[in-house]
Image (cartoon, rainbow, N blue to C red; front, top):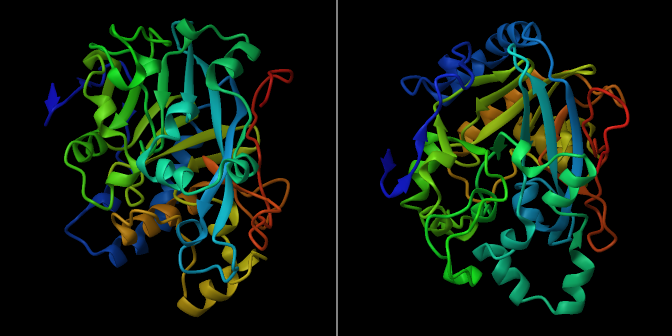
Length: 374
């Protein structure tokens, strides 16, 4: 099937189960305010069903890169710090489960190709304006995807699914292979997939948006890198989907049109992960010690602080964040905050004073002890 130039395959009929509990939140006939008023009740109903679906076998966290990100995006209209940037750490989750027929499955959430991600137009321009010695101080690489899989004793051909909350900065050609040579990679032949059996799971809305980007979106995507991917390597889904026991993808539009959040049921309760916010305190700003956050939330009667760079649908993103807030359980480390795990989490840095997190999860782990983390 073709979505205006990007080729992909409809999701397999055996992949996941559609969920309709939260469907009223996507009712475009009602106002954003009316939809927001329904979030708490719908989230409560969904939580009960989701918790009864079971749990995955194992979850581990693996740091990829820490890099600068504009404070004006990260803590939208709330922070009063003079630091122009915050630091965020992008992390990958490895999730394993067993199908009813005994087959083992592995899903990688946020398996960013860091080397290719930094050539995204926005970050490439930022790097060009930053002297190399300073750039080396601001960016820290912690390990790449393949290295982390090796440490976790996972062979690349064992990986079944690749999932991102959205496709900003993502170039997946080396993961999925290509159908033609890639001149920008100096490849004179089609690329062989690093993950030959993996499928990229994407919301259809994001695939459709990528082929005709708005000027506000263009700095953040590498849309051209998706034209030569094998069609069978991309599975398009529509909305909320239960993937496995205790593993679901929820449509959470706003940050981008086709944004999706990962929901996980674990031994410590329910977690949600996305980049709608860069810190748990952005969903509970009343407890934040970051200058400006608590005061801004009180002044404007807002219960969340958005991560807002493209501002595709601001009200929808706000509602999506409130949904995530109502779906998760409270943190066992600090019950003032919930188990919202940012896919790129705010990280303390001497280079960015006044932007250190009040609280940070740093990792999300479930299942047998001893599985390597980070």
